[in-house]
Amino acid sequence: MTRSVWKGPFVEESLIKKVDKQKKETNKKPIKTWSRKSTIIPDFVGISFLIYNGKKFIPLTVSEDMVGHKFGEFAPTRQFFGHTPADKKAKEEDTKEKK
View 1: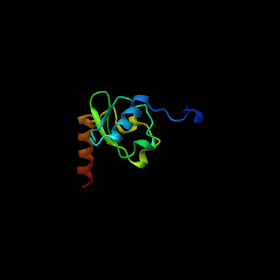
View 2 (view 1 turned 90 degrees about the vertical axis):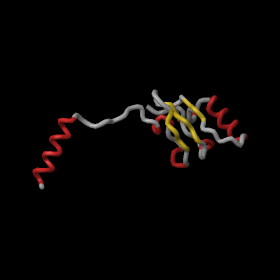
View 3 (view 1 turned 120 degrees about the vertical axis):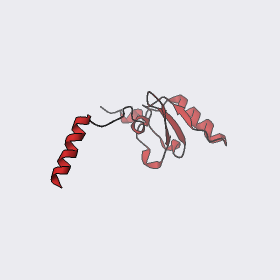
View 4 (view 1 turned 135 degrees about the vertical axis):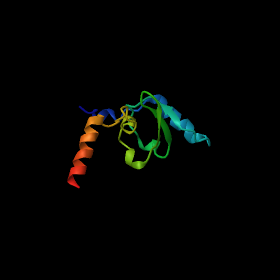
């Protein structure tokens, strides 16, 4: 179930304060955030963030297309390494037989 429209998008208050502070400064250092559940709002466009995925910080520069999405959508928490080696061997054999 989605968030009620009358409530508006959820954005961590500390994140809004950090963005306002960075807009006033000339130093464009990325903002570190652990708030993956925060919604990207139009004020964040053009600002660099470092989003924590549980292991490391993923760099992200917000564009207009990202507005309305959550930060967590752009920092995956799981890494896919492929299937088992046996599956890869079977796939190689199938391609050799077709030739």
